[in-house]
Length: 464
Image (cartoon, rainbow, N blue to C red; front, side):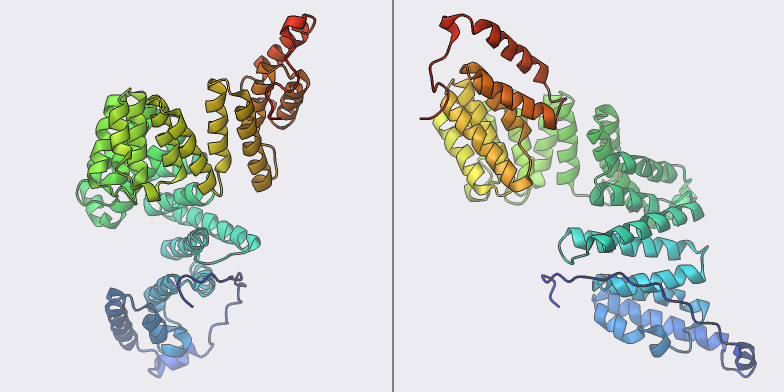
């Protein structure tokens, strides 16, 4: 199986544990289970695994010791074999053989229900499978994804209970909520706890648990993102600045991402100068083709600061043939600011034609542009295109398109059609912003209907 192929993975059934051998003591007395031989064999196997890991030879690790009952019968039933089981599970994950990895993990937690490492590893295997599915490396059916989520949450929680002052399990469960389930509010306290735990360590404990420092720094980064999503900008700034300080040496997160995040938070905090400085720092190491988001946001901040020419210069660093729709939206805004309306139209039309998932956003931008220019027929046409695309893609009316269509109908005297748009919008989203104001405008139109001077010409606002 190549890496590009997607495979459907079934969920492993929990297997019954085999009963322990009743003749253990007899064989032990007879020399069949020599502890010294077992330890020697474990050290030998772990040494071979270490060499194979350095060369990413995961298949060879599996061939060496999996299934352990067949390949290493001397140590299969010994507690000393647990590190080897862990290496097998890790290798299976690297090969995306998650079904087998989960089966071994379930066996280990049954045998050692109070073993922190066993619970942490089983949870991590399920988490890795979900990440692989999200990255389209494998395909997990919905019921399997649900079960993997249950396994991951359950065993992360158990591992946290066994080691409440840890960092990694809190960080990983936070990522499970944030990256897999998009539940920023549930992820936030887990990142907080990971950060709090590390910062409570004294120097000796930090030295002893140095491997967890990486996930402490990553927790600071993710904490800043979650706080940003909650619009807690000052706390988000504190977290990302601490992250940048801690990330200096060694570096776990790229400067492009940390300074981009700092710039984004500063921008939403209305600190335009600070945002420009942070984003310019990110741009030093960013590749315009691969990290276009840095240059797009920097251009947008400069545009907000009234520095139109600098905004155009920054955005021009992104090669035209790779500009994604959101880059083209900002390019259109810059063209509008420069007074080049025709170019803005062309850019937005190109964005709509390129965007298979979000073309409605470009169409609605075109509708709003034409509405500002009092080109009502064109505005209505683009709003209709936005609504049509959204309905075809997602099966529901596009709320923003309904809103702006209602505005066009009000401006052109189409009272019944405006009312129809508003009622449809209310049915789908009764709390849509300015809905009450639209109703007020429609009511005013009905009062003005009595005066012939306010009546619009037939067909006004619609293409023939």
